[in-house]
Every structure is written in structure tokens, then in C-alpha cells.
Image (cartoon, rainbow, N blue to C red; front, side, top):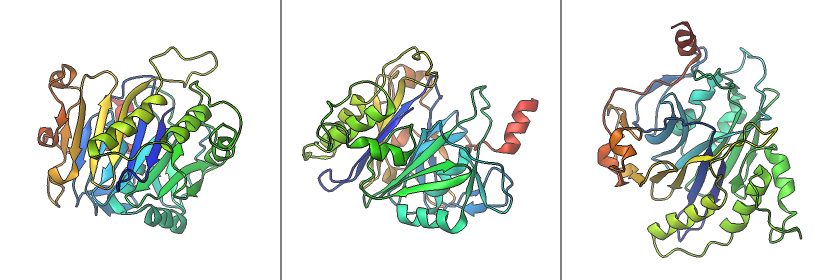
Length: 336
């Protein structure tokens, strides 16, 4: 499931909050990704690049980036969209695997507008991947936001990118597709309609509450209060630990949350099963060309017992580079 919310006027800063809702532990860690890393598309290897920007990312199983911020102030967030259909592979179009999709934008672009222009110019195809942990193949969409307050949601329907690009698109949840979410928004009291603000966990109802409460946040006194204010909104649309409702197997609890300060380049992470909030300022990470990739192990015994808290920039360690999931790696994993 999941929810993402932008607060573009937090006393001079742009903040983004997101909930990661999933039915199992994603073994998430944080990684620093410096400039100068050579990568490929994870599909055929025809699309290659060298990262122009450094970033910090939250991962799933240390194979996929699902949330992150680069040092130019561009952030991205992967959410579930059951309606996603990626189509048969078209060899005439450049491709990106789902695992590297978000990272491509963090590596290459400073603004949402530049990223959207690249999609329009290339007609890039995102390729669905099998889940190496035994789950259903992911059906996902992607939100991008930047320090200017710009926003875009990218969805794939019948193999083609559908891009919703406008700074007013501040809230994003899951189903239905984004064009229909926008249409449904104004039925609620305080958002243009007369129906009472809904309180359950349906995607469109979380959308309404996030839009309502984020539009009413008071001006924060400082950065700490700004982050706390955004946490108050995404906690309101979080989902408790739960058994899925009948007929809704994808309904899932919130397993972690992030608040990202795009202006001041701060990434804040809170697990719902760990005792402490942690954050990192990108200025404290070595993101220079040639620097090693470093990992903050959020699944270590130290982290599980609450020994990691607060500013954790000096806790990232070089344990070798992260390997993004590719179709070739999937084949190797399934044969082993």
C-alpha cells in the first residue's frame, strides 16, 4: 500500500513524508550511493550510465531502492499500484528494471522537470521482475519530488508511461490510478465536498486525510518541529499491524516511515518495530566520485536493541557495494 505527502512551504523548506506499508519485513537498510558509479538497466545492459549525483537510499532486501534523496534535492518514492501493467518487452525502447527504476532518476537528475522530459524523450519502458523472495511480481508506481516543490507521479498502464506532473499533486496513495484519485478527492468536507472526512484505511480515504491535514499544518518554528509536523500527518494515515481484510490480500501494515527535507538534504527514517528514529544529513556523507558505497545496517543486533539513534552519518560502513537486482541475477538466484 503506502502513502506519500509533500509539504512545500515548511518555513522555507520542502518536506516529504511517506509510509511504507507491506505485509512482511523488507529487511530495509540505508545506503550511501556516491557520484561516479557505473550502472546498467538490469534488463539487457544496453542502457548504461555513470551517476552524476550522490544519494542516500532505503532499500528492500539490499536489492532494490524504494525511497531516497540525492544531493541536488531530488527525491523518489516507490509505492504499490495493483493496476500497473508493463506490457511485453519492446526491444525498440530503452528499458529499466523495476529494481533500478528509482535509482536511475536519483543518479541522473536534479529536478522533476528534467526527469519528466527524459521520460517523454525516450519513452522508457519499465520491466516487471519476479520476486526473489517468493511473493507476487511487484506492481508499482513512482513519485518524484524536488527542492523546488515540484511533483510527478509515473505509472505504467498497458506498457506505456502515464506521467502526472504538477506541483499541486502533493498526495499519493495506491489504487485507483492517479487520474481517478484526483477526481475522487473533492468529495470530502474541507476539500470541496460535503461528505465527512473518512477514517478507514482505504487508499482514497488515506489520500483525503493526508491532503486535508497537510494543508492545515502550522508554520514550524524550526527544522525539528517541521519534521515532527510531517510525522504527525503520515502517522494519521499509517496502518496498524493487521490481518488483511477478506478479499484484500494486499492490505498491509505500516512497517516504516520516512520524512525527507529536500531543501536541507536531510533523510529521516523511523521503523515501526525499532525503538529509535534515525536521520542523516547528506553533507555528512562522502558522496564524492570514487568514494565507497556505505551501508547503515538497520537489522543488526545494535539497531534492534535501540543502540542506533539520532544523527547516524558516522555509522555508515563500507561492506562492499550494493548489487541491484537484475534479470540476470534473478536467473542465477533461481538456479542456485
